[in-house]
Length: 117
Image (cartoon, rainbow, N blue to C red):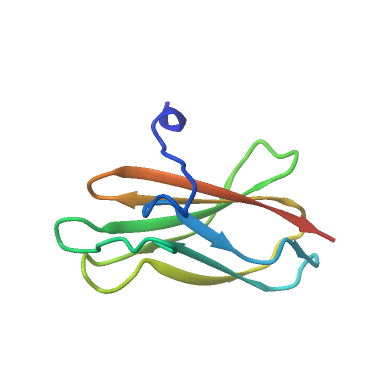
């Protein structure tokens, strides 16, 4: 299963984990900013030989068996840091999930619960 090979770790100790930053609580139907970056505390090298190819952002709504892809952000090998800002709005609470893909070290994941009032 894919879930068995996706890596997770504390972003302060690992340069591959996608870090999600956004409010913990939002109002239903109102836009808010979500930032996702790889290498927040320890910069990822981002060279032609070793780089983050993409970040995916998902929402898994509470009580819903499905997960919705909110966007895929692709990066060139040496065009800067893998850091995206995306404006979204939610109507119900859930968990934001970010996946990043390193061309050498594979898939990495993090998540953040969002309360919707």
